[in-house]
Length: 319
Length: 158
Image (cartoon, rainbow over all chains, first blue to last red; front, side, top):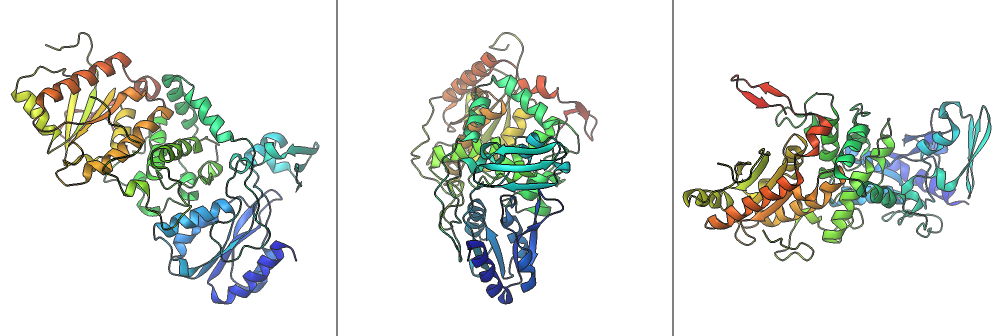
């Protein structure tokens, strides 16, 4: 029995005691999987597991708080769950975690670049080396490196870090290039004024749909987000790159020491603004200063929640 | 009579009520001459300062932001400046990625008795910001509009 079949069996066994199990099913076209809430044993047949299961389902967990639910997890998704457990936003005894070793998910933006128009892709297949898309102008072959999400190429946690069921052999960490690091290095090499102008140009595309916020597993304020509060009035309704960048910075600051770098914000962005770079930078700073990565240990104290009288990595500046 | 020749820049200072605000007062009482670019906002504690205050200030027209609190171990509330130090250091290292030069934001500790030191901090920081010149934010995002507030006076749009 394949690991996936084993997992389905486990879900069927667990389902009677649970409100639902969150997974993925086939979406509206061959390229999309969609989040799926299994409530009856026959639903489990519709569960899919493929490189198109891009969504981080842990985003849904706080809304099920107090109910017993199961959830299917990739390695990166499990970090979201651990972070939610750490912040006591979900209870461990109410969760059943079904992990699967993940060898990487597709980045539909990258596939779209190769295929031209994703809406006209009639079929998709994948193997070890890459993806094959059936388009009106013939088959398009996309190599793995050009098809997978950046995070997957250098993924350090391909297996769920916390799981009740983890069928299959654990996968080793990926050894591909760290494209996120390269992107940050390119940004940091720019002159400050040019860099700010670049952000302004990128943010001018933003339509303020807040998909980045809604997809983020750590954005748990939901209806109480300060971006929409009138008192304090952090953001106006003005449609300017300044306000839009300010929103991204609010998001980044509120994720400092919490972001698990699942990349959902950037994936969810309908206009492909490279906003993950901001979170990556903040994560790097937190790692430098406090030697801390979010979502690895549900018992750890988050670095901005504590202090040391003598900080190891903060030098007093002479002023 | 401004110490620095030429056009004034807009520098915003967030000062804790117990030490640095007192230190600035001491500098004033001692009649130490200081650059006049700095506008001071008094906060209860450096731990009260949300890093977003600073981000917003820099994005909406300030050329520099100075934060000053009690020396570590001297916080009026015991621990506020320890938390602040972590947040402010993380922010300081993050800001360059949005195109804010590192020198536009500094945080430091000044006690209520250090009037002389306050003068040096203001002088040093003002010179540092003048060396950088006006912030790129106004050129990139446009100047903030002046809008009348409820009482009719001019105020910077937020």
